[in-house]
Length: 414
Image (cartoon, rainbow, N blue to C red):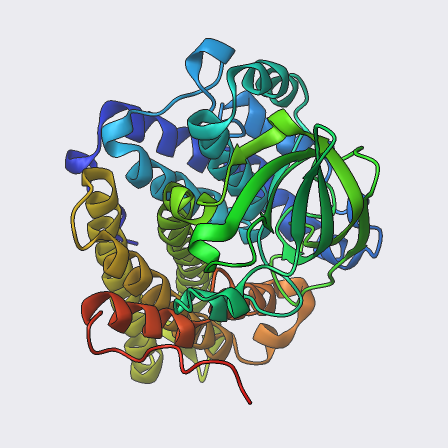
């Protein structure tokens, strides 16, 4: 398999990639392969053994983005997003759910680094560092209106249904959030709510830091997903949930201020998808060179060889676009927004094709749970709807490229 060019990586990136690869090969993959029934455990807290996150802690990848002053691992800023992509690919090669579990910690840590008051950083970063099982979550999506809000329809009607009102020195939050990565088992949440109903969502949405044990916050369920099942996706309800006034992160312009989270998120999403594709290829390449059908090993059949070549080509094309997009974000290039969405869409669809080839080349074994190929297929399929659907992402691409002529909000229904 073609991997990222070592000559283009910094020493820090090479060391981190190699550490992640060893961690995945020595700890993650053996667990996933030997305990294939574990992802179907309907007790979400028991699915992933504590040792897996402890292993991530041991190599320093659980708390990326935490400032060095709090003993975190702060990446080189000029290559931060590309490093996130590199590590995400390696971890997702072992398991995409685990990668998503860790990714939320990274992205939310960056938000806290940039926007949280100093006293809240001093309170929560040490707690995050002290407990290997400590997880962070970003609460944006709601039951009514998710990625369609980002077309963008910057009007009052598209505002968050979750609302926050300042009363007696506290923000009182009421609403509901769903499809939240780490939502079921996080210890600390960044929550978005409408704070000004008279303006568009880009001018009237604020973000708040909400600890799990805050009265009025209830984690109602773990969403049982088809893939990425080692990340516990959750649903939350806020009923007169009161947080101190100083737990406000960004007032009214929170969505615009979270650009660092969203841009890096698209790249990381594509990179996790890439890791699933690499796992598909590696497992399939091994299988077709050892399994005999029709009197010869599978790879000697031309139809098999053609599919394998197609898998490798699609993977390399995805990696190239991710590298270009991540470099654009690191450098603040004017095309970074359109490239982020292109990378997300392209990875989603191309890796799904790679996973389909993997399933087909394993024949009947591909459908067997214990072989693990159907798991990779399920994991690839879920990326089509993670971090915006592919169709909404395409609309955002065109809106970014042609802002003056692309489709606009048509107004409320009569």
